[in-house]
Length: 403
Image (cartoon, rainbow, N blue to C red; front, side, top):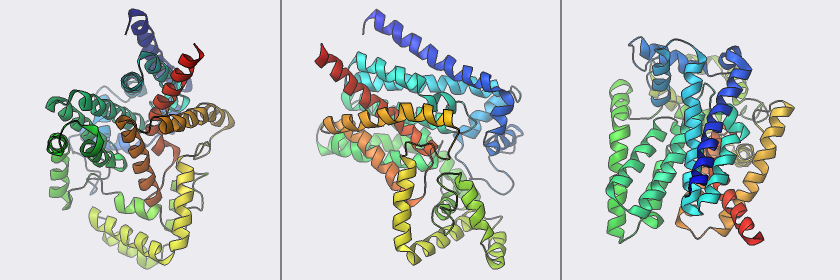
């Protein structure tokens, strides 16, 4: 990488940071708080007050990393820029990871293309600095993929251990993306490491050790407090939200929260009384939702199958969901459609490469989670950076052929 390319990379990363901060400053602080997941900040306030990660009797609603990050920002006072600025740095970090991954796969030119697109990708520019964990989980996932690719080249124990720690950070940020860790382990054993099967299993064991170091304390805590070693106690509720008669009453055009409200409105007084009895028992409540979801699935297999395809269509749609204004929709589609199409072309032409196999497995893993549960655009957006990387490889190939 020459000095000119390093200068371009530095400018792109600075521009990525400034774009994210600039957009938030333009929309202002009231917009930031009004269009947010305030529960995250409520939990952060609880942490700062010395009451731990419990809101009332709920002690494992979210994994700890994003609320802990907010708690650190809350120590400086409740000003939105204390959240926006470090989140913008994470967004720039995602652009850097896009560069590093694309450079590993295709070279510095593709790396700069991937970095530039990620830096100004409208969805990232807007959502990386929202009061939600999307930007953080996108960064941790991109960092994990780069570290896994790097470890597969160096094959050193330290490199594999760092990759495992990054995978643990994903699980501690968003539970629904935790399957990436299982995908990574499968990839290491089959494609992602050199040497004999014994050596590959050893590399996988190193990653597992790192995962235990990263995630183990949280699982021990939840087991002691609620009787189950879980990343989040929302799993059962999320399963029911995605599998009940009202799931598609508003979703995907509008928020799944509206569909959830409609579903609650149909519960009988006996159901509500039963839920009230579990109000102080997170896992019993989660199990109740799981039973209701499984009952619906068994009673309506055809409707469940049709719903699975609708969820996939929503998760990968060229339209934002929930739907937004015309300008937001246009800016999203103009970037997303060509990136996705070129990314799929790149997947096809590079399918023989082990690194691309890892990316394909991540998309398959997301699809599996989506058909079981559900997905909005924000749930899939952490994958867009890999389509960007693959698209950059396609563009670089065209540039080389043209020359």
